[in-house]
Each structure stands twice: as structure tokens, then as C-alpha cells.
Image (tube, rainbow, N blue to C red):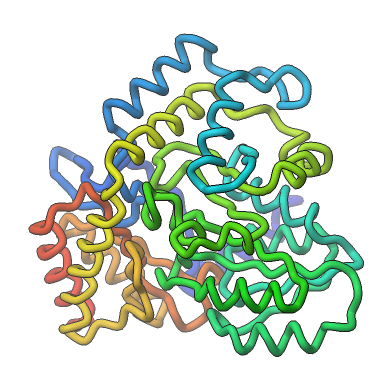
Length: 387
């Protein structure tokens, strides 16, 4: 058989405790019902509990009724609808930039943007823990990729100085809230260093959009760095609860992306209902500016409960709280034991995280009441300490 080579790869993944499967869930959100039982889901990115918010659903339904189920073409053919332009204008205003461009997903936003900013004659400086989509985008670009120690401005400075004579454009990329560690990038220092060395700075705000900054505008806006960060990337699929990605940037760069970003040009435009849901999420953020603050206060409380019991949550300072287990199989076992207690806490293993740092990645959402957080913390502490 022509697929005989596949079986040894699958067996090796099982042996290393790295086998994965996409298990179906009866519904989405931070609190779900499975087999008639209420279960706390700490593996959802619906941070603000907007996936079922009535206004968000209504805006999606309105768009569906007005435009139908699909945009039916790519953006540069006949797929650009008024609702796409409305969303891009709203996102640009929220982020404090002149323009924004919506992509089909956050992955596509990074994959489309980075190869436009840097090519074969250029150098990209990437935090060691940036998202896989950013690394894949660097490979697509053909640019020289230089990694620097995680969240270490001094390491970035050294790399920039080492390559100051390399020629071509220079691009620094980082996340603002890191998706697996939950820690925050030192954005002011990185922006200053990038400017001093003539480098562009792109920040992936996938997990900061909606959860930090004024009206959920993210950490770039919170620090007032719009003038120093060339591209602020975000998603519509986490705190905004729908699907899609975008970049906020200058109007000039947007024009170039429209001409050159393959992940934008060669794909069908996002469906109207998805765009309507994103507009609804922005409405909620504008009407309720403290949602992110409430979320972070709840996350602080939860993290403090774990830390007091000696649980390692790394340098988490966000709604993402890792519980480091180390061994792959032990992380899976801990996840399974918590599931039996009505708590979903996915085991995250390499290559998503570095070898030896398998963990439970816990996402705090506004669907979780304080009592839920305290019950979950107690169960996690007991499970981890008894392994």
C-alpha cells in the first residue's frame, strides 16, 4: 500500500504521548452541557463569553438575511461587500490606525502580511515563542530568520546589532499576549529598540484584542505605540468569538497588501454572517469597556489560588494560565482526570510548546463565575499534586 509509511509515524506519535485527535463537543463556550451534565470548559478562547451573546448573534443573523451565506468571490473580484468595508473601518478606528484589512483567519493574516513586509534580501527577528503561523510566514517569505530569547529586549538588541550591516529591510515580530505562556511582551522597550535600529515592528495581538486596552483595543493601543508598531495584527475568533483575522496599519501599507498579500488575493472573502458577528462584538466592546478589566481581575484571582499552592504558572499575566506538568503522558493523564470531574483542561504538548514543558493551558472566560474558578482551582491543585 502507498500509505504504509504513515503507520510508523502515527505509532511514534503514540509512543511519545503526542497523539492528537479532534473530539466533537456538543456546544461551544466556557460552560457546556455534555451528556446532561454541566462542564466547565477552560480550553475555550471565547474569553468574553460573546459566542452566544444576543446582540452578536443578531448582527450575524442580520448580515445573513441581507447578503446570504457567502461572499461568493474573492475580495478583488466581486467578493468585497459593504459589510467588509464597514468592519475594516471599525477595526482601524478601534486600533488607532488609518486602515485595516480583514483576512480569512488569523493564520492567513500572518501568512499574508509577513511575506509582503520581508523578502529574500531581508531579515526577520522573531521572539523564540511566536506563533507557528508567524514562523511559517517567515519561511514563505524567504527572509533570513533570526530568533531571540523570549521577551528579552537585551537579546533583541544584540541580534539587531549583529545584523546591522546585513542590508535589506529589517522586521521584528512578537506577540503581545503569548498564547501558551500567557505572559506579556515588553512592547515599549521592543518598539524603542526597533525604531533605533531602523526595523519595522509587527505585533500579533490575537490574544490581547478584546482583553486588554481601551474598549479591548489591545496592548499596542494601551501603551500608545501605534506610531512605532507598523502592523497590529488581531483575530476575530478569540475574544470576539467568531472567525477571521485582520491587520491594522497605514493606508499605504494596506494598499500594498491588497496588491501583494497572496493569502488575501487568492481566497474567497469572509462570509457576511461572520463579518456581522464581528461588528456585533465591536458593538459590545464599545458599550461595555470594562469587560477586559473584569476578565483580568478574575484571572488574577484564579492564578493566585494556584500560585499559593505552589503550582507553576510561569510568568502568566493574562487570561491564559498555564499549569506546567512537564511529561507528555502525565499532562494527558491530568487532563483526563479533570475531565472526569467536569473540568475541560486540554493537555498541550510539543511541538506547540517546547519539549519537557507539556502543560494544561487554562483559559479564563467571563462564562466562569468566581465560584467556578475556585472549584476548578481546587480540583487542579489536587490533581497536579497527587500525580
